[in-house]
Image 1 (tube, rainbow, N blue to C red):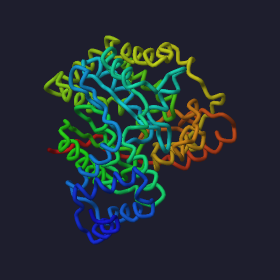
Image 2 (image 1 turned 60 degrees about the vertical axis):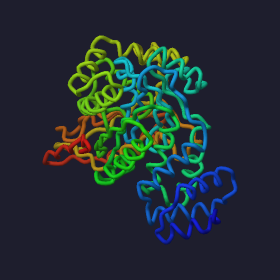
Image 3 (image 1 turned 90 degrees about the horizontal axis):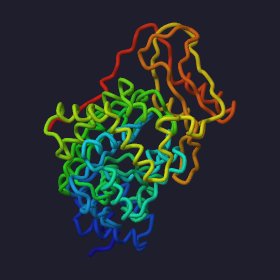
Image 4 (image 1 turned 180 degrees about the vertical axis):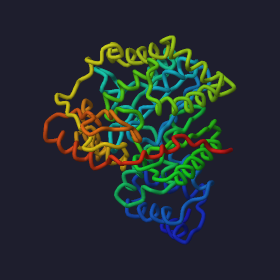
Length: 435
């Protein structure tokens, strides 16, 4: 095997790396035998020159094999995972997992902690009193067999190469590279052991991918990786130029998810549900058409079976299942502040990311993975993009720990929206990939 400098130079000169060279790179870096400065040089070469589909697949598999591969074969049926690239108000996983599980689709999901506007799915679940996001592999598998699904934090032994590479990409300006993003996500998904993955790739000011074309490219790369690895893959592209639903935060998003499980989902949340849930049910071979799958989903929502499944998951993971009936059991922020319209017209969301920044100001989002966040703070939008408003109308409520952060978040919210004379057009929320 040539020295690592030869690998850097090969990629610098737009060459194609072999499977053996990629494996050498990942093995050497995880073992501490290749220094950060050399790996940084290779990452920048990849950032500038890209990777073809074969290189991206081999990089993903090498990262997946750098740690444990979860064996879910003891769980009957086709195990389906759902992954979102995230955004402002993205509580979809909390809703779709118990619905799919109630339709007979085992969902064994591992999630990381969120970086950015709010916490991730794991942080949101931790807003439920006493909820544990840590289970042994044996208990995790047992719970999926018994209740249909489990949502836990990512194991430290799952794709450790990704953790090392992500930290380095974060400080070397190489995060925004589609092959590196795709291999990061898919290495963890493959290591987590599911048979099928439903991807929700977001785009817009409140998402990582800023435009539809970039989101489509990322989705296609991830689908190609998954299929090469023998997984069933589907993908949906969703618009994140305004927050999804009304609640943005941690506990407030769990409450909104519970409301959706009770059949009271916001219109935009329902639109995403109608796309994602049938894909999960079809991937799990419980239905053969979207219409049939959505009918099944509707039945488990209306019967209360989906909510009961969510409660069983909470109880199995030592949380308080009564939060589904009594929202007062969540820790609540002490101060509620209203933000009001300053003129008549129509609400226009100028920056979804700007609205997300409000939650970071309040302490509900993190800049570093180690940062502690407050799970009770957040905001609830009372008007959505395109809604008619009168001067003095309540635009949103802010839930804060003190007046200082409430005032700062209020100013941030007002700078992220405007009231205009003409009604803004609604963006297309869902984009499905043509096969």
